[in-house]
Image (cartoon, rainbow, N blue to C red):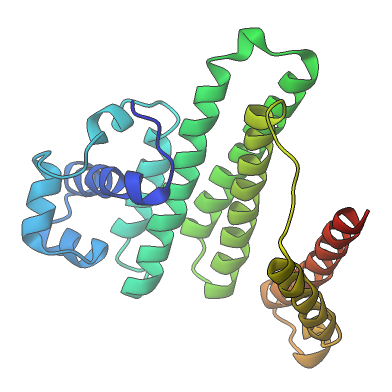
Amino acid sequence: MQKMKNVEQILPAVRSLLAKELIQSHNVTKADVSKILGISPAAVTQYTTNKRGNYADELGKNREVRPVIASLAEHFSNKKKKEGEMRRNMTIIETSENILAIINNQGIKDKEKKMDPNTRILQDRVEAELHEARTSLSMANKIEDGFGKLLFKGIASDSIRHAEIVSQVIRDQETVGSFRLDKQSKRYLKQMIQEEENASEQLMVKLVKTKHPAVRALLQSIDQDEMKHKKMLRSLKKYLEA
């Protein structure tokens, strides 16, 4: 399979596999599939007849991708789950990001024999993050509560991002160049740091009083992210000034 660089390249194949899975495994009509995916009935026909969605067949043979598509199709086929088109589209995009990370990780695994011990440890971390992402997305698909969905989708998104970071470290650790910012970018960095300082002074857990456990966890994650962003930007600024 051609190396996929972004979600836009893989989305048509994911939609094609999802349309086929909904029709073949869950007896969903093409008319309902068009509503679920937010596309026209004609587009559904093109996806199911392989006129759209390059690489769908090859992607469908991937043993790590198949259960991800099956889980999402099962979720969408449940008529009790009332979701808007925007949320469904976001779920498909998040799933596509997960699949893209899986494929890129498999490309790294193909070179595993040449890996040194430290690289293998990093590779194990990538696989652990991807496993957590798949598990979290599966949980998000099964939970009815909207805030619970957001919680597990957030965990999945973080895990995918962690996997992408470590994967790039594995690929580029020997070729990475020096990091520099021009004067304008440095001014933006200073402004970002000030904005993060202001945001971190307004703790969400203090502004919003709630007993909902998922809501509280999500608010805490916002506060923690703001503090994390501030530390990351400060660290970058310190590195650039050294």
